[in-house]
Image (tube, rainbow, N blue to C red):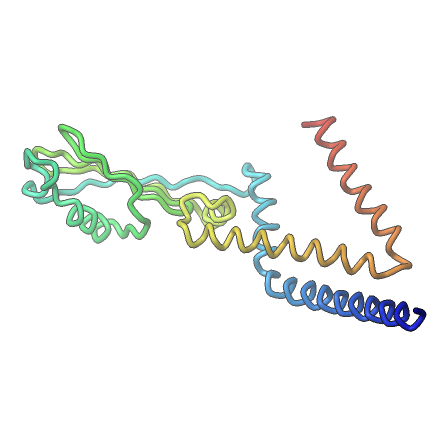
Length: 208
């Protein structure tokens, strides 16, 4: 009976040691892999929290142009040359953002492009093909802030945000696991974690 208990104890010690090693490996390498991502979201968290200091102003410009009337002057709206219109706007005004809206009305077509820190709205007269376009461009901080929020950044960037969140969760959990394996620091570490949680809760309750 004693030998069985000893074997179970040895197996438990071995499993705990292996679990600690895996946690340490994950913590170190996930931290290094996500270092740039964590730094990016940390810095842009500050810039988003203080827009008066960092956001800057959007640069707004207005431009005009002419499209082929055959593209828009048709009774059947299905025959409106959407692709040709969009490509002309891209070429003439250097637009790289995706189309987010193409609205066809009785007298005009409205085309919108959106990207991080960028917006373009064109209004095309269906009678004569004349159009006006408004371009809004933010500075580098504005672009980074929009990337932080995932606004107008596309599905692939949204996936990157989700992956970043998962990596941060892994870093936090493995950090806690490693703390629990250090007997001398275990209690004090948990206490400080609870203090941090309590402070955040108090700030919320008192000032928010």
